[in-house]
Length: 527
Image 1 (spheres, rainbow, N blue to C red):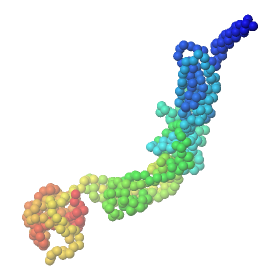
Image 2: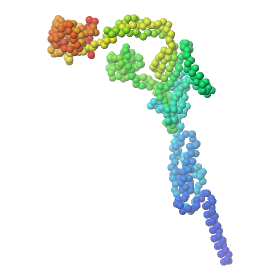
Image 3: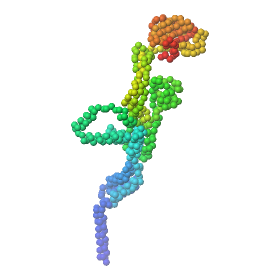
Image 4: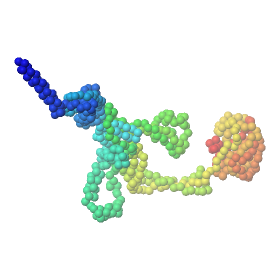
């Protein structure tokens, strides 16, 4: 019995050794276990977004598994997917440990990451028109937006917009190109012809095309209507990945880009303009025109040629430049013929021949910016009967100027009708009066020749001066005359002292300007 017990003990020890040996062997030959090595941490628990997803034998495996998981998620969508992926490992040193298969860990990672998608960015297009930008869902929407701007003026649908890479830009930027359907066909045919021709034959073909004379077109040869169209603003289209909330519906974008909005502009006053005519011409109510311009007080405010007025004009965000050919018949005026006379002043002109309108048939090329015609060129004309030009003889000499004949003074009586200031005075004042102390200097308003100097009845002491432009100035109620008849004087030269002689109510200077022998308001001619 004792021998039997001893035998079983030896058997159990042997079995135990075999079992231990089997475990050790399996540690070397089974891939799910890590063998003991005295090198520090040799087994790592992988934690992704705070969720444990498996155990690996080294940290590099964990990094490669998460990259594969992200790749699988991205592959499921054509758009750009942003995923939160915070990965951590917890290492430990073990004698023997089980690791998880790579596919198992990757599947778990995909499950975790799918629940932590931050957002999906859609492949989109940013359209930039000058400083304005709009985001559209795809290239088809971009073309629809740009085509809508053209279709407003291309009612036959003959022109189409295309997008091509901009060769002048390093980045991937698209630019526009507009062509007719016929041009696209001709371009394809031209490319085919060039590929068939080579060397001298191609050179000869181009040479004959260049020297072939252009035949003059008849009226019926013109197609009329729209002949060219382009965008008046710089357009750039860039591909981008954007959140869905940032993308604009294409119909809303079309409305925003093509509808007119008020933009500030400047109108330059030309000869013959009045405020009422400008108001009608620019289609702005008079009260609004006055409100926009500080220089205008009311509808009677004075305007001069060259003045600039602020106006508003309706314009869309995307301007379209288009050219149209049109046929019409019209009465026309010939250009005025001027004959220069160097002996006359520029204020003098005489009509030598009255004009008469002619009649003609016309093909005109008009250039428009949106709805506004900005240029017109007559490209064919047939005159039914000639217009007779107006012929005008005009002076070239710069006329003399006129200055105030005294320094200071108070305007005491204006030009025109008035109450009789004193007995013997006129009720129609033929000049202007400035109240000024007796003895003040009086100067020649303009250079000329003294025609009269001395006593002049109601004027008291008076001086008359004739000027080169045929006008005359008169200075009355003087206290002392300093020039004599026939004497030449220059502008600003002292000619007398002011006073209170003749029919006068107090010390002052009476001043007149006569044109063609008749008095005019001097204040309208003084510089």
